[in-house]
Length: 176
Image 1 (cartoon, rainbow, N blue to C red):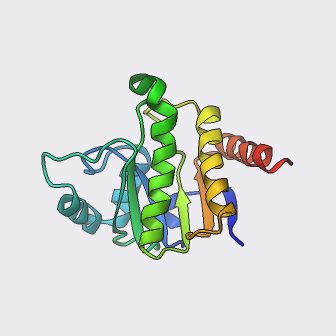
Image 2 (image 1 turned 180 degrees about the vertical axis):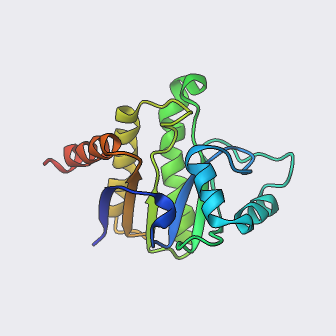
């Protein structure tokens, strides 16, 4: 039986098989979670990103790929590109859902048993946390309920407010 845990922590410190990076389309590092992962993981992550997404190429919004985790305690980083809320329009929910689904699929294909997600697109990309939490937790709950790998899922939030929002979304889905 799988599990979902909602925590307030620094995702770069977690000992899981894979952590998810809310990346930009070029996979060249940036601000927020993306910058923190690249800084903590060291240059090998960027080198691997350049290999899988060469200069001039872009990873489409909603897609995901895996790279080394460099110096992080995780084995892999799964990079996914979340939607910019103001630009995505009516496609925003489907694109955000795809980020979670594709990240889980990539991690499963890589043999991961545990994975940690940040709150994708809710920082500078402007996705409202309450709406994003319902989408994320619906995907994660369906995945765990289907008994697929990775079976241990951690929702790693930045701040107590976001942790409480995601916890409430999970409890609403679980009926408690």
